[in-house]
Image 1: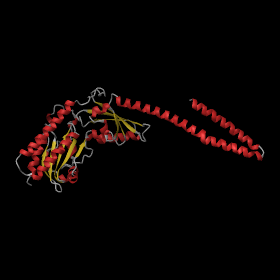
Image 2: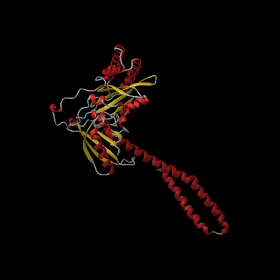
Image 3: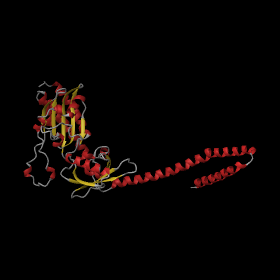
Image 4: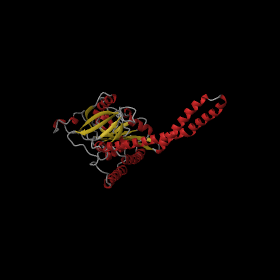
Length: 393
């Protein structure tokens, strides 16, 4: 403040001197040289002294304002994260900008993973188009919206989603705030959510993977020598159930041939369901193994890409419903099977693809983790070597 006042006084003195110079224009012509020298001096004083001081003062004021803005933004971020209701900030394409603690607890998705991905990917397939349409309407300024959706993690529990538009100061376009509330249940709080996973749980998961690796190695070493199809079926039975709900095996690379399909047991007849009011049961008939057995592997983009590129694909809540092709009726396989995560693993040895193994997890089962994908990659190398040594069909 003292520097501002000092600058103001000096500027006022400069203005008075300029007024005197203007009045000096009436002096005789012989004395104008001295007046001109004085005017040039004053201009130099402005350029060399007053203007730099003015820039320093204005930049300091801008810095103070910027600091206040940052503090305000930090406060708003803390409030957003600590809200007891699950809240997500998305754009008009439903891409997640922010996800608070309560929302990560409800959806089972880490905020770091969710950011930059479509929020519709966390919902059941039947609800995705509706949410995209309502989000676009809110972003256009057509007013707030609300609808009932189902999360892939718990598809039997309806979730009420309220959408409202807002314009953050740092955003060029209108964003959409989504508030989630489970129907008939109290919304989870950030403090009441599960804490860090204990070391015992991590150790248990690691031990389960080691057991699976041991079972796969035993199956490959002790089983009877046979065709590639028989070897793949033996490996698929090790993975089925304990590691994946669906196991699909294809032999070959340039010309793929499906040899094994293992899926979950069919659910009980819906006519015998105890609660017919559950809307989650009003869906297409269950996908059966013969539906995938009749499928041409060449019509599955994921399988073809794995066979050509030789790289493993791990997808959580697959965004493309057509990634594994369609059944005989034209329905996407990933939608009919209610796939929530998948692993598509090429069986490669010495750079040559021997086949492709695809694993699905469905409904509320936890998604494949990076550790499980790494273990599967190790098993795929062992299986590929066994396929290379096995006799051809």
